[in-house]
Image 1 (tube, rainbow over the protein chains, first blue to last red):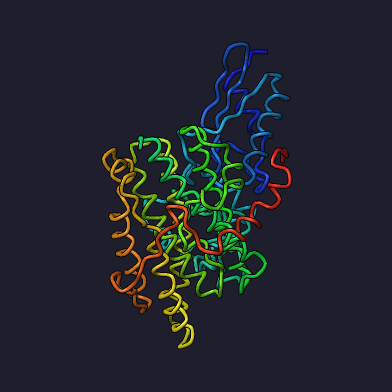
Image 2: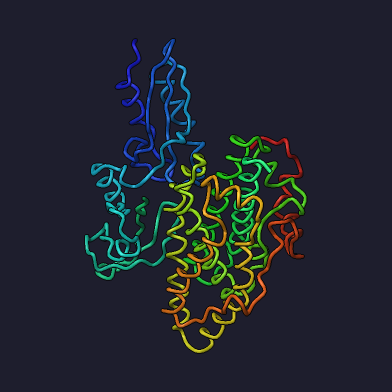
Length: 162
Length: 254
């Protein structure tokens, strides 16, 4: 079997984020490059969402074992130091999955102050924007806590990050 | 002093500040006055220790320094370069909040500048970290503003915490003339005096909305010494506790 970038990407679809199990590493925009080198050795470069993300090593290991199992190749996973993660790397389909999971997706930022875009984050349960930020920190580093005045839910939000 | 020695000196100070402040933040875990604050200080602890780790890694990988865990946990007290502000015990919540406000705005100013650093590994790290720190300053600003409007006692406590923290916070910008001249000439960073001026402007804008009075710089004695290895009595006990598990078996693989 010839190993191609397409096949690697296909295998990566199976590697889910341990903290948000509905999103895979491609949905999150964590993969920056894949390369097939001599003797079908695969090199995958990835970036963590937040620099102190405690799940990085686990994700790295999951990427390696999944791609090795799917393609029977030897796989190296490196942290890409040239790139850094920002929330605009997450595509519309991924944001939809996140919302259906009950977490408000990150707004697209265009350099504006976070405090303003965080003020009226749409509630993932009732879509109301009559909400407020309760705390910029939540159960994981990438989440904030909001309250919906409309339906009374406390909800989590995947924070925008530049 | 060579260019790399000067960079190492600056990075060690920045990393030690983040590590010790991170440890202090983590001491609020389980003790925060409300659940959201417990989570906030725990999250900020995680961020700070991650930022310290990123800097220790640059020291290790680009500047020939010791492996990050050993460097973080096995040095003697005199070899740490943190400022006195971060060493102080958490005290009451007013002190912890005002320290967090002053410290994180200083970090925000510093990291914004470092995006333009000619030392590439630092510029790349800066681009990542400055976005994360925005959430720290957002948190600090919200509480400073709210607590100053929460009645007489609350206001008085915030002002008093600010009076205590301000001279300590000036210690963040303790000058190191030899290294700084070299680093400024090489466009690696802007120098402590420049960063301090911007920090004063930025914090003043928030404090004045909150109705708090920033003491004048000339009226206080800055808490210098940390950058030269002279520390408060609070650092050694913190280091003893922080490194306790690591020192049990430094070769252990986790």
